[in-house]
Amino acid sequence: MKMIRAIIRPDKELPVTAALTKAGFPALTKWEVIGRGKQQGIQLGERVYDGLAKCLLLIVVHDDRLLKEAIRTIEKAAFSGNPGDGKIFVTSVEKAYTVRTGKAEL
Image (cartoon, rainbow, N blue to C red; front, top):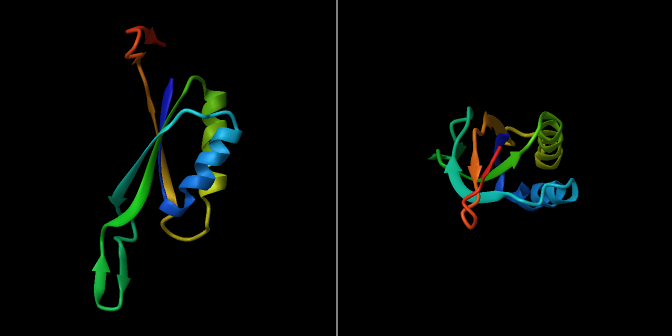
């Protein structure tokens, strides 16, 4: 299993989650977060805002085919062409447990 962590613009949250649902990925976790990337925030006149609003999506997929499909779906729906569109991180998941049943998934 793989976990996808996608950090995207907040205005792209609904298009991305809708695209993921349509593509067959209905289960996800999302958080409103604050962060910055290579651009080190944004400067408006004299003020510098180094913490920008972002949305963090967490999705777990079971195989590489689903991983590639989920990443393509996120990239397409989150794309604006401007700096700050986001990042996608992929990590391995060794086990997952269902709280209600206590069963482990592999």
